[in-house]
Length: 102
Figure 1 (cartoon, rainbow, N blue to C red):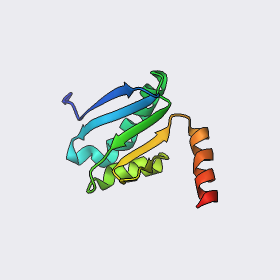
Figure 2: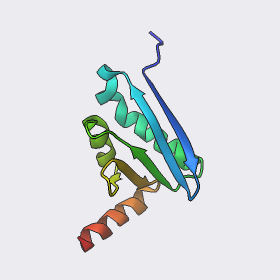
Figure 3: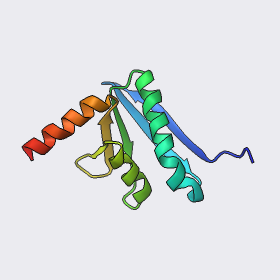
Figure 4: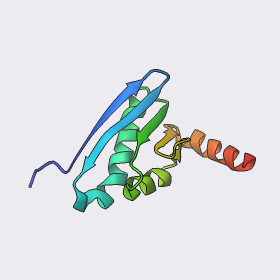
C-alpha cells in the first residue's frame, strides 16, 4: 500500500559510536522486518564511520533482543544496552576472547 512500516533514527557519537534510536516497527511486521532493518542500520553506520554500534532496548522487547543477539550484539552492564563492532570478524574474535576468559 506504500504506507511506512518502520521508523528509526541513526546517529553518531564521539568515540566512533553509532547509535540506533527509536526503532518503531508495525507490530504485525516486527518479526519479519527487525533483522533486515538491523542489517541495513549496521551497514549505514559502518559507511558513516561508526566503529561500534549501540541500541537501548526495553526489557519486554524480546523480538529486538533476539535479533540483536543473533547479529552478535552483547548486553551491557545494565542488560538494556546492546552493542557490537561494525566489523563482524573483529566481533567474532572479541566474543571468542570473552568466552575464553569467562
